[in-house]
Length: 585
Image 1 (spheres, rainbow, N blue to C red):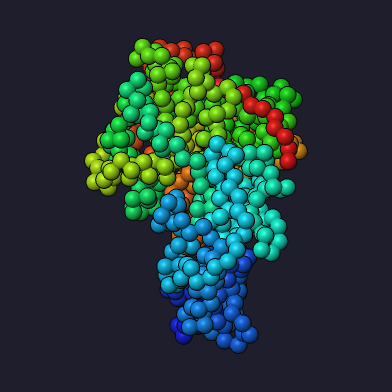
Image 2 (tube, rainbow, N blue to C red):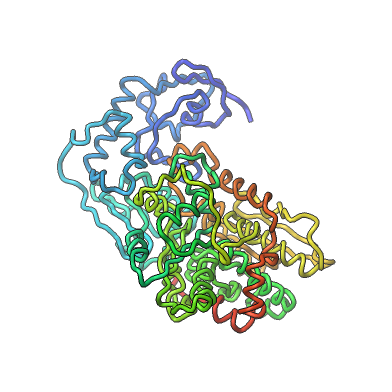
C-alpha cells in the first residue's frame, strides 16, 4: 500500500494511505482522546472528543474518521482544540449521573478519566436532564441510562460482533436514549447475555448483576459448605485487575486468594472441562459412526454446547437446528452437578447444604445457572456465578494483598486438570482438546503433535481437516455470534460438510468474555488483548505434564467408581441437558 507524508504538531510521520488522523497521531507518539470510537466496531465521529485542527479546513475534524492525505498538517493540541474537547465533555457531564464514588466504574470510567485530563468542571452547565430508566429485568445485566453518554459502542458491538442487535438509540434530539425496540425490557428480547456491551461501554451505564454479598453470606453461614471453581480463562485475566500485564497467569495466587476469602473447597472448572471432553468426544464418535442417518434427522454435524450465550442464540435464531447441539452441559454446570452428586456422596452431605460458586469470564453464566434441567441433585447445580471482575472486587473487599500472595494449588480431586481442560478458555480450545482424545481413541496411538494449530488463532472462522486412520474428519471453529450465524446458515442451506463445529459466543473465546476485566478503548484499539491472554494459556498448556483429558487420573477415577463410562445412563442424568425453542424476534 502506498505511503503518505503528514505532519502531526509539526512532527513528520509516514503512514499508509487511507489511515485516519487518529492512527497517524499514534504513529507520531501522540494520543488523541476518544469516547465513541472503538476500532473495528464503532467509527462514527459522533462524540467530537477527538477533534483536531487541519490546516486549510474550515472547522475542526473528527480524528477517528478523517483520513490523512499527502502533505496534510494536523494540530492536536491547540487552545481551540483543547477548549472544544473540554466543553464537549462538560456538556456530557451536565446530562450525566455523577454519583461516581458509588459507581462500579469509578476509577475505570473513560468519561471520568477524560474529565480529569481535560480539567473539566462537572457543574459548569446545569438544567433539565434527559429522562433515564434503569432496566434490571435480566438475571445478568443492568442498564442504567442515567450514566449513558450515547456513544453507541454497545449497540455497535451487539450488532456487528454478535448479530443480535437488541439495543440501540431510541427517540430523537434531547429524548434520544439507548433501549430496546418498542421500549421492551431486555429480558423480553433475544438478548443472549454475552456481556460484550458491558466491556464496550465507556461508563457505568451497563454492568453485571453482582452476587458478591450473597457469596460472602454463604461463607459466613456455618451450616453451609461453600465450594468454588474458576474457569480456565479467569487465571489470565484476573491479574489485570491488580495492575499486572495483560494475560499474566495468576493461577497460584487465585487459589491462595480463594483460601483466604474462606471457601471450604478450592477446586477448578478445568476439571470438568476435561470431563466435558470425555462426554462430548464420546458423543461425537457415536454420531460420526451414524452420520448419514443423523444428517437426515438434522443432527449432524455435532456442535459444541459450552457457551450459554451461543446456546440461547441458537434457541432464538435456529430453533429448527437444535438437534445439532451436543447434549452435554457446559463445564460450569457439570462442575456444580459433580459437586452436588459425586462429591456430596463422598462427604456424606445433603446437596442442599452445599453451595457451589463459579468464577466465569462470562455474564451469560448467570443466566445459564437458572435454566431448566440444570439441577442434577434436585437443587441448582450452580448457586452463584461471579465474573472475573466480581472476584477481583471480592478479593479487594476482603483486604487481601493479591500481588503479595504465594502461589498455591487447588484441592483434590476436583482441582486436578490437564492442558486440554485449560485451553477451553480460547477459541478453538474445545475442538483441540477433543481432537487430542478422539485421535488417540480412533487411531490407537497418540497424535504426532498435540498442538492442533490449524484451529488456533483469533480469526472469526477457522477450518481444518484431519486424517483419523484413513478417515477424514472436517472441523470448523467460530467465535463471535456474527460468525456463528454464517456457519449456521451454511449448515441450514446444506452447504456445510463439517463433522464437528465449535462455537464460542465471544470473539476470541472466553479470554475475551463479557465478564473479563474491562479495557479502555485506547487499549482495545492498540493491543490484541484476546491474543495476549490466549498466548498465556497456550504457554501454560505447553509446559504441563498431562495434556489430554482422558489422562486425567481424577476423571478416570470418577468414571471407574461413579459413572461407569462416558455417555452412560448415569452420566446422561447428571451431565447432560436439553434445549428449548424460543421466539424469534
